[in-house]
Image (cartoon, rainbow over all chains, first blue to last red):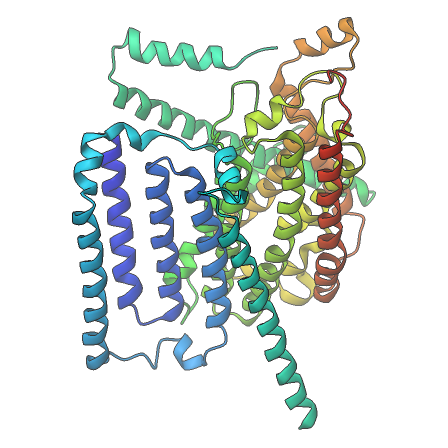
Length: 180
Length: 365
């Protein structure tokens, strides 16, 4: 009962913010609405007792990615920031609708194929099993059969590449300024 | 040691058995009661902290502070709160009104959210997840967004400038804050806040003693970074009055401004509270291994210990605030990225080595 009410509240928040995010003309408002969508998703994780995943969602997406978006938005032109140049583009609407439809179809196929709904209704208890930090840490750093140390290290290499890329771009800008 | 669980189980029994309520209604009523308690404690502590700040500031500047309203100025803050509540609330022309009204709530949510994690007494943890410390850092990062949106929504160049500074500063100092907390997690082996405090009960078990050199360094770095995170002390250039009027909350009045004011003081309290919890033992009493002394100390309830230690740290941070001159933005970023962050990485390695070789200070073995 309580779970159902919480789920309904979260679903309404997620859907309303998502619709507001794509329909608003002001880009800063869209970023803020995106933040609330991400909070709602984190709330769903907490509802499922995936506390680690929920905390990560808040920390990385809400705290990090949205903040980065907002800093990046500050770099666009003033007219866009004030919501003056945004228009409704017919062609793009169809394209976006098509992409959204493909995503929806994928989710539905995955749900039906794995019979997730039946499984969770029958084995309702599996929902409230909290995984401790110890287990997550061991799995993340182990090199055994189900260990995740390779993807974990791969992510760090990827981040290093991002940092180096950023430095290279910065260096190019500096050279151009000097040559001018 | 007084265990607060006696009270909570009594209340739970009262609702379930005496009143015969179902599971759903019991939890709902308990949640509402706990929520009200948090908000009440939040408001009361804010009043206490504002009064303390005024007095401490006054004594550091060789003044005596407010003395007219009430005995020794004790009613001054209540008068200020009343004034703030009856102020006119206005909106700026051509500003993004939605974001303007939304921003204070984000800041206050982040502040109340982290406030709810503090351990008040044995068995009196309000939020106690097994990812506790991690979740605290995650929730505190919401506040950055609130500050930025406030600056943006105000349609004021000083506000935007100040919000940029504040956001950059808070994002930077979150790094060393998190690294110091991680080094404490390495020592205790748990992220759960009640677990961290439990690991510090017993003679000479506070982390700052248990972890000796790396823990003391981590505590100092945590205090500096926490001060910057709360936008206070020598790091308050986001609201540098002389150049940016009042910073990101220039255009706010009434409770909009009140929320920022509250959040600033409570963030100070939360930072001190987390420093107390993680490094100074939380509600754990001072035990030195002599039975009689320990027994006397254990009679003092945990909440007294917790509030006492927290207010000592608050006083230290206020002392720093009213002693040091304000830093420039480049100095602030240099301090974090070139000194504090490498230092906290070194602390992390040092702590790992100490724990791995068993060089920690424990009497029980």
